[in-house]
Image (cartoon, rainbow, N blue to C red; front, side, top):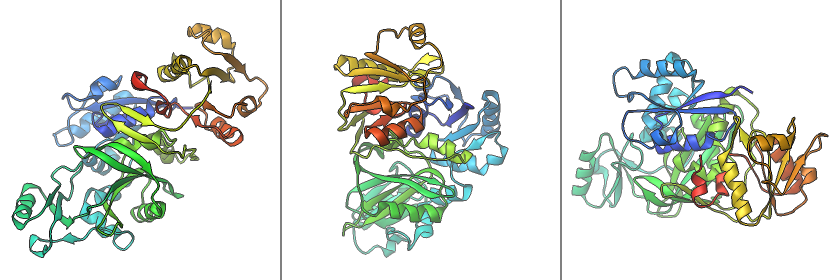
Length: 430
């Protein structure tokens, strides 16, 4: 299988960091980061980080093209709203593909006013006042039409405050005030099949417009709402939208974005690797989803932490492309192995390795780590060897995970999902 070179630009955003976290454990990808020569977390997170000018600086496009050619980049993942539009509008000049919706969809969703117009009648959108004189009842909400992360967004309660708020931002949008709970709905669409996934998370705690605490939540009718929006906007790949309850409790649209969201990690660890699926969707590969449907809470206090109800007494671990990835020990998987050992949980290696398993384990100094080594050489399914009802399987193969999930009815994980199971400092291993 060809290994795809993926460039995340700009890599230092919360979006960029989530793309990295999603792809770093995938055998299909090698991830590079790029951004400005300013202090940002990507310089320490990405093993291969490169300096590029901002899209608002002269010469940014030739510099980006040169870097993509130098690194033999196959795909760019834009990691900031304005960058999405800029890359799609210059896509023909790039030597690689941009993973995003069409340029027209990106332009529409970059404007909240245009988004509301495009979706009028399909979903509940907020009332918009064209000028301050139309406002007769307070409070109302003012936000920039092309803003992100709640920057410049404010509740106003008086005519004087409204005038000040409108003067403080470019292209102010005056909307009805929505007092209820706020949700983000993470989505994935295929350009031919339409919506394949939509799941809501309640935004519990915010910091600088970013949901730093979110809880998965079932919202009746949200998939139908997402399907209508995705079809109307011709969405493809990963995207999300935000809704908030109005005075009567009805879900009302705030915005739509054709990109990865930082807190998509909550649904990634449930089995939906949005960035990887975005590559598959672009290549028109067959898509399948296998998700953990239980409740998950994410708290982002400089690291991802999860709360879940998964309890297990045995962990089955695959060898090739799981424990050993790119000819190196996968430290996140190894952290899980030794976390299990510390907790008295049995750890069994289950593999179809083509060579001498014990010799390979010795080569990587892993001899004696596992309670049992199951070496399958006759083509039997892995599900035939898993007998414990409270076991888990970690395996890079979707087909293996699907078979085990179906026949053994136990949770299964790929490498991008196992941070759900890691505790404390181990969750930050890379």
